[in-house]
Length: 265
Image (cartoon, rainbow, N blue to C red; front, side):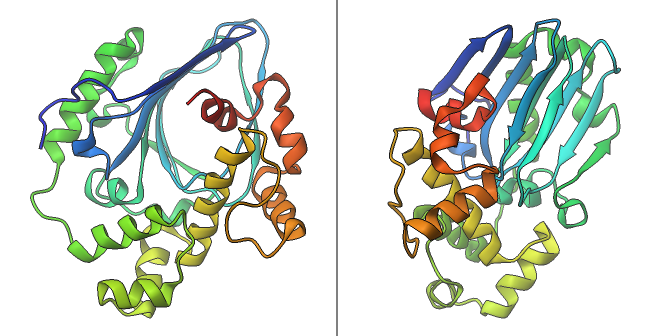
């Protein structure tokens, strides 16, 4: 595997009313573990209201602001939308992990803080407040650390499991997965609940929602994935975002950052 993040394959960058964000995709060699490395900075004197939506990722945040000292937080998987306020002059760098990254890079379980977060030691991965002065330097330091802890061997069933789940945008049944990877469906669900705090089915619905956001970002307000009908589609979108698809598309004041990112990709 690569020892550093080479050149990045894609990025999203945006600023609106003093709120700046940037997300960069990692090298393919670690793409099974890391979805992106990013940052946001509320440079204004006003609070920034955002809505966090379930996206199937576990975020490792390195954050500081005028109101709070440097802090490292690990946010577990989310199953419901949550409104957040980002205080003025808040700066945060983050690493977004896929499920395999939680187990093999972070080497932990996030089951105990579903829809919640855990404060980590301030010396975690040897990142400190000074590292938030330069995003490029931060990326390189994170990349080196990830490559230091890359496992030599990964359970092939788990690799195939997530490969199939992501390839289908979550539209695959546990029975099908069980046959494809020769892993008992009960054991698969036990693994998900123990490691991530939710069932495989619940995780797949989140991925289907996230895939639907890509369509909504293009103005497609009807189901293109395996929803029963338009009513079911609207219900599921509202469940995970808090609003109906037409309202989500408006995305006033870039409240739904994930949707803003998808629009630019």
